[in-house]
Length: 456
Ligand code: GDP
Ligand code: GDP
Image (cartoon, rainbow, N blue to C red):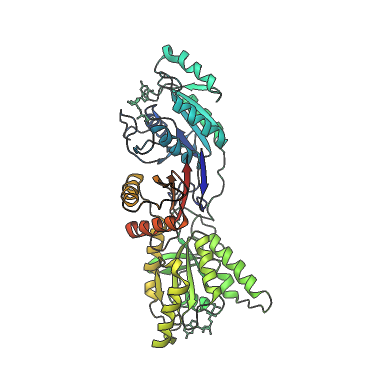
């Protein structure tokens, strides 16, 4: 049904709405109008979320937090948005697939008064393939008279159908007990040592001698705050809390910078390990470059490491106090030649020695983090994609013209897009889409990934 090409970053924080401790995720899957939204409202104990009577109401995959018997989890309503180019079945299938991929368990909802349709059968195939624990909900069983219909759903081969009336609440307790049994107790650790609402984590990286420890001394020395025993936070002794621009930031793995182990043999290897470790723990990378020297291959390699790690990126050109007109001219040429692929990264020209432009560091970091966390609604994204592919269709190859059918943002931190297409999209066309996405939505300071799924 689906083939995938292109690169795909791990979804770093489950569903990409950041800032929360990771919770197990339940995807609510079903064709339009079976009562998914009503059921989700029931589960989260709310009534105000939109429920409309017509199938395929445009809306996004939405995530809510819920609690049952003291256990917290996330509920994703893999709602229906309608796009004409694809049949409703393909649309529903595509959404379900994305929702299921990111979930720990699946709640499959069938309208018991209608029974299983072809669309339901198509969904079951996807669910089987994903191999996630699944609970079957036979919805719209408003009273005992419809319970027999629910029993027919045993034939779907998904185990016991739980008869429920999402509308009135009937049977929802048993259903939730089954859901809790299907969800893992402790969700997998997904993203570093993220503490909700804690300070943002910065990795200060760069090749030896670019001025990392000087910069650290500058910012720490002047504006250091001692945040030793913050309630409930365990402090990694290799990290430092530093106050900058009125906020506390966690500079990760600063011990590696301060220790200044400049081994002669294996120094590169050591430096690269340290960079990897710091990137692992960070949200944003400040890559320091020595602007007074020709850009080295090691500089571009470190920038690539940050991009590939999926971190927000700021590039700081240090030792600006040593730059004359001529060097400046050559530096700009070097940047054009070697750093085109990170044109989106905010740039600051600083001097750790004189303190020049230190105040520009925080705004650059904040801009990058903002880009990193940006989410575009499916409606906006598809309006944009529709116009884009109409004006600039994919070139015809071998008599065929692959079309972008629709797209969705599958995650943030960094933004991750999945495009569904009728054929293979060339790398050049994907880059073109990325460029236009950036022009339209910003994404300053963040890598973005676009993966393509081909629908036959
Ligand atoms: P979704 O498209 O799967 O999210 O379905 P909705 O939650 O929007 O529900 C579709 C329609 O079915 C709405 O008119 C709901 O009021 C109705 N509905 C949902 N659950 C039940 C139920 O348990 N019993 C009855 N009788 N109607 C329901
Ligand atoms: P690290 O290896 O990246 O931590 O680099 P250091 O902070 O140890 O700096 C390497 C050398 O560059 C030291 O001699 C610093 O004094 C010098 N240095 C660092 N920043 C600047 C700067 O902004 N201007 C000048 N002129 N020298 C700098």
